[in-house]
Image (cartoon, rainbow, N blue to C red; front, top):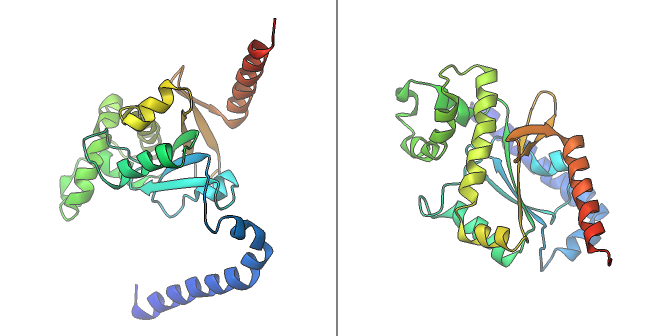
Length: 232
């Protein structure tokens, strides 16, 4: 990128800030006022840092509804492996913000998954921190036993990676306690960028189902719980 292009990119961002200040903020003044000194998001959304993935756009949520944690490959190191920003964000979300749900969302054409599938280590030689980070997803690749980096393999690995990171989440003390008390649920998603489709992990079958089917399953569970709560 040339210096001119870089400046133009920054100018575009600043124009966006101007539009936010003059158009978007005034229309949502009450919402932002309510968020001025508190937040109470219901969901911790763990997503890849990929610029094409926009959690609020995908879920159609407003500011204050999602506590978003993003990193390369939507990875959650097992507790004790790499204590740091990811672990502290999870702990804060569960214990301080008391979120009820944690979602791990993978996506198509993920660069992190491509790197895991690429047998040439020289491509990460200049990025040792990235290489170290991606080791937290190695077990997902081992499950698949594939080596090509075609779209189908990348998607399969991204889906397996979601499953793996959910299992890593369960090793975090705050998450384990929330699950034991039934105050917390975990869910895995996969977002297909070109189609806009989101599929949801069915943990019982370890397969992904449509959003419609996931909604129907949740509604049935809610109805069953309400029926059990009725006095005999």
